[in-house]
Image (tube, rainbow, N blue to C red; front, side, top):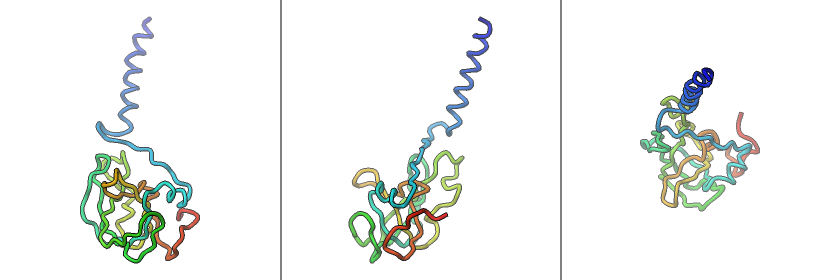
Length: 154
């Protein structure tokens, strides 16, 4: 009987420690899907475009995290999935990594370099802002070809 009385507080403390290890209170931690190939990411994305990153235009809140917002141009560039609207100023959010101890991009923001990229995008609802589908598989350097590479860059 004494053993049970001792184990109860220990088990309760262990459960509290485990539940708080995933992030701070109120923080939404996500398990992002891993796409084995760019083709898999293309199938899951709503809009896949080749774009020139023009500039950072501020922040937007995504999953209770301040995420970077960028203006991108798709004018005259290949669209791999979705309608070719020829945007000159499309706002795209770089999806942040979660539970990162306060740094939304601990491994760097994949959109921070002003370069030509392929963007795998999704959005919440029909009027929501476009954002990369995951922090890891939302951006691919454009190779100059109209087709996706078979594998992610190493």
